[in-house]
Image (cartoon, one colour):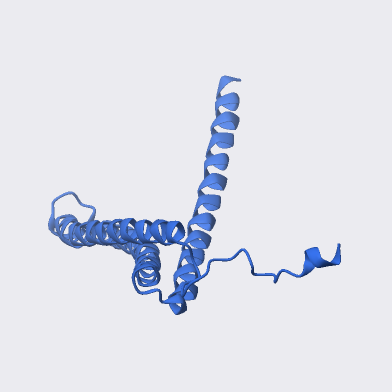
Amino acid sequence: MLSDYNNPIDSGMATGGGAFDSETIGHLRTAGKWGRFISITGMAFLGIFLIMLVLGGGAGMLGMLLGDSGSGLGAGIGMTFIMILYGGIIALCFYIYYLLYNFSINAIKVADNDNTAAVRPAFKSLASMFKIVGVLMAIYLVLTAIVLLGMLFFGAAAAL
C-alpha cells in the first residue's frame, strides 16, 4: 500500500562516513595500486625507448650524412621524420600512462583516506584514457581493414 513507499530513496546505500562499502573500497584500492604500477612501469619503458630513439636515431642520421652510402641529406630528412613520428607516438603513450597514473593516485586517496572529492578527478582521468585508447583502437581497426582489403584486391588482380 501507501506505507510501502515511506522508505527514503537512498535507504539501501552504504551507511557510515563513506560513500562506498568496504568491498568497493577494496576493489578501488586494488585498481589504484595496479594502475600505479602499470603507469610507472610504462613511463619508465617509454623513457628508455626515447633515449634509444635519440641516441640510435642521431647516430643513424650522422652515419647516413657522413657515410659513403651516397644517401646524404635525403636520408637525414627521412630519419628526422621517423624520429618525429616516433616521438609523437611516445608523447601520446606517455599521456595515456599519465592519465592512468592520475586515476590511480586519486583512487588510492579515495580508498585510504575516504576522500570523496578525489572520485571525480579519478574517473575523469579514467574516462579520458578510455576515450583516447578507444579512438586509437578504432583507427587501428580501420587501417587493418584497409590493408586486408588491399591485400585481397591486389592479390586478386595479380592472379588475373
